[in-house]
Image (cartoon, rainbow, N blue to C red; front, side, top):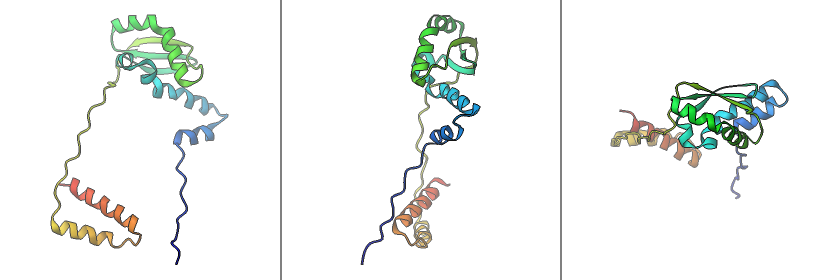
Length: 158
């Protein structure tokens, strides 16, 4: 008796790769490339600058930044060429030709620490019920996943 081997599934392609392929040669392809500015900004310019200046709009080679204060606006005025170079390097192409600065609201770049969700201890009856529900699945691997999902759902509900 031979074991049934399942064919290995290919990993799904990233959505950005699919969109790039789908939109190739269209005006939307250019917009997709321009949208990457927001993705690369924080890493390209560094956390200190990103905490005080964020991309607001991009049109025809001009990137407009919202800056949170006049002192930072003055400082970034001196760094425009360097910022353009860093962003274009991160994009692997020369999209940004000019930077405009405007005082505006800047989103916080500091990640808030995530709290672990509160879990409660399941009763004996709940554990038996979960096992019963999972038994309806014939595949042992899938059954274990299904059982784990039900258990976690129950633990997180009040």
